[in-house]
Amino acid sequence: QVRLVESGGGSVQAGGSLRLSCAASGINFAINHMAWYRQVPGKERELVASITSSGSTYYSDSVKGRFTVSRNNAYMRLLLQMNNLKPEDTATYYCGRPSGFGGYWGQGTRVVVSS
Image 1: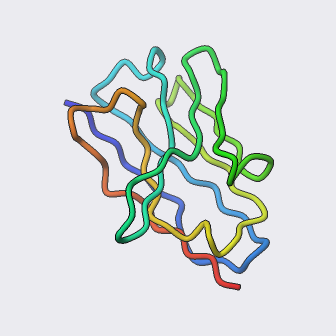
Image 2 (image 1 turned 135 degrees about the vertical axis):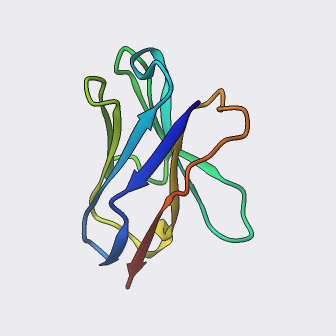
């Protein structure tokens, strides 16, 4: 079955950078449209960025120009390079896909940005 393991989160100051990684297994990763989401307590999970199987990308307005999503199909990894981080980027970040995995989510990785 599908398994998604996110890593790379941490605590940084505003203006800093982090690189998130998601290791996928149990799926045909290369053909999947994958995405990064984030969630803060009390709010719904929101789409941050996505990348199709052919490499086309989408970014939410709040991260456009600062975040870069990429994928390594050989290693079944989804990556998110986050630069110029802002306090409002503080959240738990999850990888997934727009069509979902039947309600499954990994444990996420926590990002805290201090001002």
